Length: 610
Image (cartoon, rainbow, N blue to C red; front, side):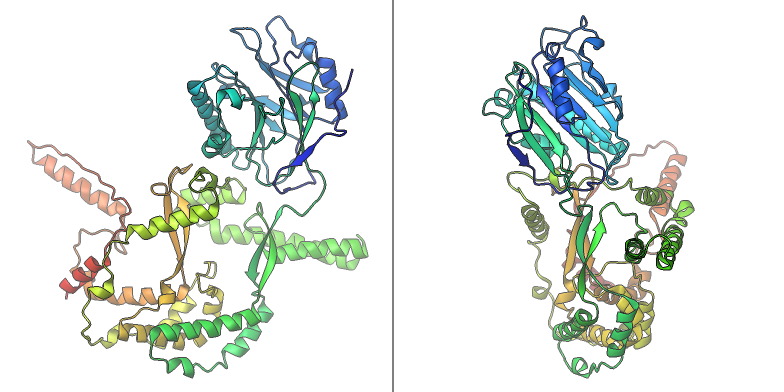
């Protein structure tokens, strides 16, 4: 008897990156055995030689006359789902006994030959909370209707699992017979986000046996083994990489180094900066452009962008300072030993900083929400526990038209531009006559300083790249120049072009999103200086037109949707109290209501309020 081994077998690695190799994932063996009962001994040897922990079997050809003891494997727990309506078919799974596993019978469908298990090995990568394992046999007699049912079956079960385990890892294996059934892996990927990773032939030159997974950051060695016994399908070994190729848990990002010493050096320069050159520039566009160039050059000098490692599964309170302390603690242990004064110092420092960071984050970001906004409080609690992270939704929208993220971004940008492309530009419909600007529409240094000092430093910067912390810390120095830019813009009726730019972040409105037109909400991240200037203008306009607005408009500061509902109920009850009448309510939701507001109409309405 020839025992299949890895010797001289082709090995193909997928294009994923290992996530955490200290706690490797289980090794899988996928095989169509065409009757397991007479191949059980060989299967056990193959699993032993290749150190397999999970075995997925299709075409087990079992029935009720075959008891479990006849097909058991040493140190393995067996699950089976036999075909009952005819001979052949059937699926089985063997799990190493030290791995906790549970059969999910409510995931199974009597019309589909499948087995679904929940796995929780003793040690998993920190980023993975649980494993969903399935084996499916899709017979060659299946047609379009059976394919449709299987698409829905897989999608429904995967979504149900990920809703309970957002950080879960999914493996769907089996014989799908795509050549004869035309079952499409690309369509399945769009529906459920699962990628087929077996790329070696499993029967002659065809890939009939698949392993579908949502793993985006794991390296797999996919190896072709000889068939088990007389089966005409090659067995497939799927082995997660155990070699530390890179520190895969970390993602490299660039951040400005805003340490205190750098801020002090920046302050020494900004306090002595002469803004006279910028004050003399008459054009608002040139004025702001020069201001941005000067500030950006100083930030590049004192706060250079430095690459830093960020763990995708880091807790929100894991700051860069805390990571640095942990790194120094580890180095002190290696260099000076456990009993050294340096190691004890950093050990105590880390323990203290961790406690302080946790308490501080909860107090600042979570605690006050428990009574004020329970829904958001729960979201924050899930974020702390690592339960809110989900797989990227982007793959749901990838298609032949948009095969990459870049193509998808271009399509979405084109869609947003197309919404208002038919609008008439403001410059073509406004009069060029000069209008005297009243002094109360202008601002002074004190007003700008007060607003800058109230900025939230946790907000992300916009396209200008100026952090809120810098604007807030040096509000006294920035107030005169921002005042000059704003007043010049108001007097000339020109808003700087650079401040009109924004970073658009699409957020899905439903899960999963199906189309970019209906299921994505654009969130615009603008420059903080732009927000400050908009705030000044809004405050001035509201003081002018606030009293002229309809009091039944509830989308104003100090009012809410609750007041709108109370007023609506009052109208309904008042009408019903009169008797001999009925009430009908029509609800309408305007598609892209805010995006499709014509600014020309707004200007005309403001002119009518004069």
